[in-house]
Image (cartoon, rainbow, N blue to C red; front, side, top):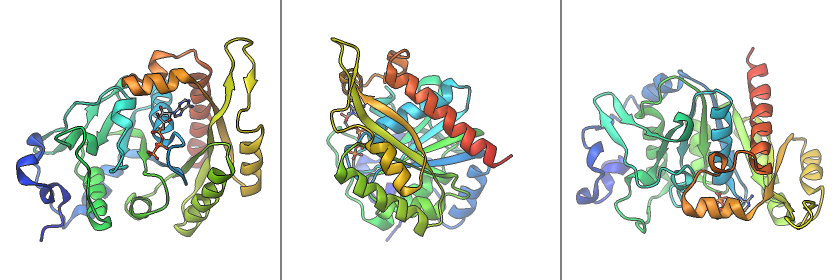
Length: 293
Ligand SMILES: Nc1ncnc2c1ncn2[C@@H]1O[C@H](COP(=O)(O)OP(=O)(O)OP(=O)(O)O)[C@@H](O)[C@H]1O
């Protein structure tokens, strides 16, 4: 039986444009090395718990880094709930390929985007893959895509510390580190500690934590309201010995833009959330770029 996940899907539903690319599984690791050597920093965005806004953070951090002049790619390895294309406004596009590999979709600010979502024949097609198949798919996303020269590759992970997280930790050469997304709730904080311990187990660096949905700015008085409690992110970061990279507000415009498939950062560049993403991008650049000088 083939271990190629793209071929394991029903043949008649194969993505049309990828049939030319028959990835060689032997030598896959070499291909990953070759592609990834042109990518300066590889950052995986993780959340211990689902629904905390990890894909929103990955997408908007990517746009903020690109707005700061960096060459950015984003790979969505959340196979069961790929939402990066929608949040970047490129849902419905398809991946094409030439003899050298798969060509990423061109997103806002020239961000190179790769997601399983571009390969699914219908909106409601589920991805029913076991861990080994996901591992192979991640190999292909890293090694068969023409990423070219990039400053940053952002890897949007599924929630939790399961197969995909382990595969990324094993497969990405010189992974720069993890960014963990959380919300100010005890349940999410508990899950963050698992992510922190996971990163330690696989000897990966934690660049920091981003607290999403931290507060709400009331349009009536323009004051912040800490709906889930104030200072939780800061305390949690201190307790776990990790840096709090930023606190992104809860904003109905975020949910609306995401639902409409419009890139939030592009649509509302002057919003408090977009400014926070610029500040987070700045911190991330300082942390990773000063470490490698
Ligand atoms: N700061 C925010 N303000 C308002 N809505 C938000 C915010 N962050 C995320 N959302 C909304 O919350 C929902 C979940 O976001 P998202 O899909 O990014 O979460 P996730 O952690 O990646 O989810 P999953 O566990 O499915 O991977 C989306 O509808 C998104 O628009």
